[in-house]
Length: 577
Ligand SMILES: [Zn+2]
Image (cartoon, rainbow, N blue to C red; front, top):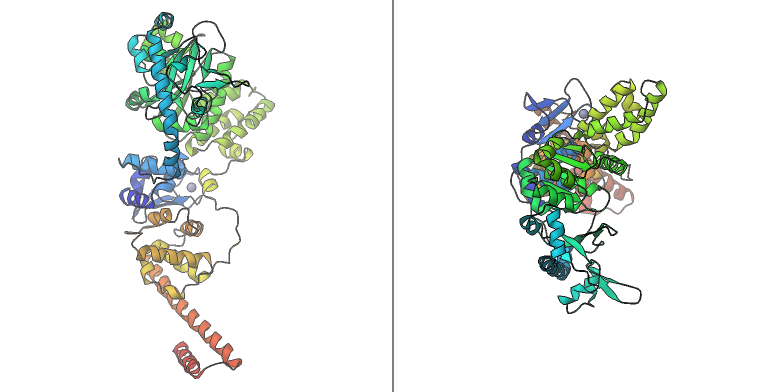
């Protein structure tokens, strides 16, 4: 959980104009800025950014929101990631509220400690094993690189770990995946006679191991199982060692094996990590694009490598963010990266990465390979093959680029292709309000007042709160806004701040919906102020009429007290006035 106060502070410091301008060039137009909308295709600008309101809005497709909302929609990020992105750009560390999460961490501590001891044991065993040292030397690895990656050796011994764990029968050893218990209850080490690659989390704790056989045995690679510490689909091998270089180069190379990571590092290519297990996952891609603007996936040039590349492309389409580049590299020849760099050297490998295929090109190339676009049937197949993939893309600019290219090959206009593939404008699609929920009909008066307050939040202080109906979403939201301003929770309030303040609250929906309409209903300042004053007067008149109706009803029933009768007379006079 990110504390609300931090989000308010972040939004007070961030300027939406700077944020949007990082992605979309803006032109000043009066008090606002304008651009062609990044969320739908258009030729004349209908996308505006208001510095006063800290709010963006598109008259064409209806996309709107705060700086956080813009980053979420543009970059296809979740709320937390968008906040992190903005905070990073300002150099603000994101605080976390402690909760169940830290308890979980405390429970994991004994497991982490065991993994650290095992890693040390394997390292010591490596020093004592001439055949393992010889194996690494034949692979061209120096002691320095072996130490940097903490390489070790699991001896050819069924219960080797008994040397360091007196409590070899503790359930913890099974839980962290070091020891296996068979059906007879007999225990033995999971890793035997293998070179050991410790897998570390972001903070450098050992959370799992990969083991590689020295000779021809099977399986060639053996990983730790899923444990409370180790989740294969989330981790990247070699990240702690590669992080600095990844940042410096703003590029990360992703390979399939530990040996490739270590082998490339040995040859001076350090910005390399490996995914664990067989397939690239969405979590992998999200982490990778956060690490660097350029992500190069390296695959073998064979049918398995082809399949892996395609799968990675599909996963990346879903998680790729505009402004980031995912590329696919299949090395010339049949070598894996480790073999390639040992034979051809660093420069040749770097050259290969420079010629990697961008995801959009790879996408179009792979689809066209399977279709004969010189025939109408082939072009129809191209469109139907492309459709499910295009629908997965969450990055608006990327989708436009790829659709244009597919449209060209299919001999369609971009609009025709988008229609045939059922592609909705991305921003509208994301910002669409949830399906109609049952709620009381909107009240016109409260609605008008809420719109006036969204224009200028400070107006909320002037609202007669006791007269606002609470049985409709607009009234409830209006009261909540007034209270937030009253309690200084929305200091220096602007629309962007307000939208984020109410994100996740019961008022989120109505505020988001009405804030999407305010630009369209905006008259000049004076007119807006008149509407606001007029609405407050009508609110008072409405309250008066209701009070009169109530007293009249009791007069007819004959239950009116003398004091109430006097009050009714007074109210009637007030109403006539
Ligand atoms: Zn738009």
